Length: 460
Ligand code: GLC
Image (cartoon, rainbow, N blue to C red; front, side, top):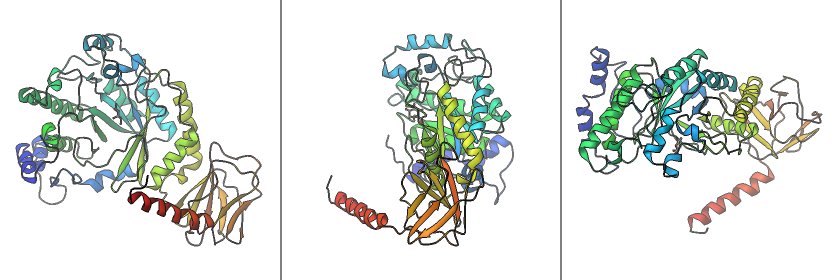
């Protein structure tokens, strides 16, 4: 099977799936009406799904979400790939299902933490690559309700998320190391048919039994391609059942947004950068390489000013408790956001780049200065030719004295120590958004351009 399918094959697939609008009608029992509200099928794997603009509205405003990796691997505490990385035989790994019995409603703690952190949505692993379902799958007994936990952990999660007024997201792994059919699905057509049918059935269940779902996060589309997973049909079903949902691009179809992982890369369309808090997705007991609150804030600024979202992961322990450093770090970010929310929501990239320990963003004619390294009584930014009309600390509203000294913008009479923690924000209003024209710009930019050109010629 090739990764790229022809338009004819694609349209055929859609016909097989009874078509987009027809599928919707099938599920709702209503005939789709012509014109407004009717979902037209995308014309290729690479095209945005229908009603993309409408469905993405809340998501574009949300900016910050919580990712949760939680399952049998949380017992081992060595990440969600432990089974494969350590060659744990299936029969041995399966035993973990007899131990996995988290305390009731652990998800409430996560949802509270997410809200306190300023996050607006959550995405939890309903099933990871190990194939263990946290929901009551009709297709397998390898699930939390049928094993030690004896209850539907996805239901607990959904209820907890809604109780905090947040949006509900489901992560779903297409790959399944537990399934014998999955293991041979690339070469055995009958096994593939059974396995992909099962995947569609599980998604159908997830899309019908838990009320309104806001985000679907496919992952691990291995070893099949879009044709193998019957992705157009799968996505058509998802949209038919959840017309407002947004979906990612990991089913070999464009989806609503792309998913840079562990990096922040401004992409053309909507994008969501997912990142770990330390170096693990699933609980890593020995991992203490935590990102600092200041790093998370600058990551959030980078995402926000480039029109992306930040999906930040926690890996709860098997009992559902969140590692203490994660709690502390996220609460610090949340408290900072309470005081500094305007410096995150609705910001754009500023035409100012160079400052020592200072980063920048813009909203209209206002410039936000994110001061990570507090300079003491004065702060100078080179290459600004216009005096701001006013400047103030964002958190306290206290005025900040600004002067123009040639092309140097100087904030003076600042306190000796940073007034906010971990990042102090000064917001300055200008008559028009300033463009930095400093010695740094004049030397660094051409230098970067030269490096780029030399690289293009083969220099490394
Ligand atoms: C990687 C990991 C996977 C994890 C995902 C989150 O693909 O392999 O385990 O769920 O990242 O984006």
